[in-house]
Length: 291
Image (cartoon, rainbow, N blue to C red; front, side, top):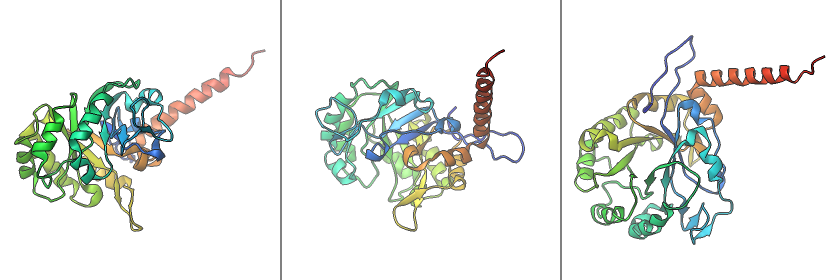
């Protein structure tokens, strides 16, 4: 089921929120991603990159390897990673990434052929685009021609040019076989969920709905600097608006804890707890020796 659909049900327990996937921005702190994100319906993992700043999170690339490599075979067995959109090569710094976009495409192409034990359903090129990047219709478009399909990229609107202007700009040059993840901007207070939904509808109308998915930013500015996890109420406001679209939470390992997941899907959490307790009870009974 795509989109953030509320499951109606019993009592005063809030409805469960639903998402299609989780984003994982791989770094040294999250090489062992774990969570209960499938309680939310997540079954697709978007890995932002497997090589970043010329450091590889996978073996046999020719680049220096991260201090600890993820166990991708284990990750591929997780219910929230039944399908994977595999991010390729990028740079953390956006300006550096854009200045080297064709180099990154050349680095990325062989990465798509690595055997990782994942059910890869598509690829993601981690160079983000917005209308302030004047050379995107040239340099970025050339880079996309070197990459495998199905292919996805991220789009945002920091300049607030508006949904129609953004959609028209993308339609004028983005290849028709490339899908977009639209960053909703809620995590940086760029817009409220209702306006983000308006962007989605305009983008879907202009580009085709099958090419448009949404990144729900699961973070907010912290009073102490940096970012904190969004609250359950903040995320509910986002997810409720995005029904009918494929929603991906950014990002699971850093911002969507077990407690936050359970607050967003309390009914699914209760069902899992009950099933776990029943299983434990059966094991307890079976462990009693017979006379």
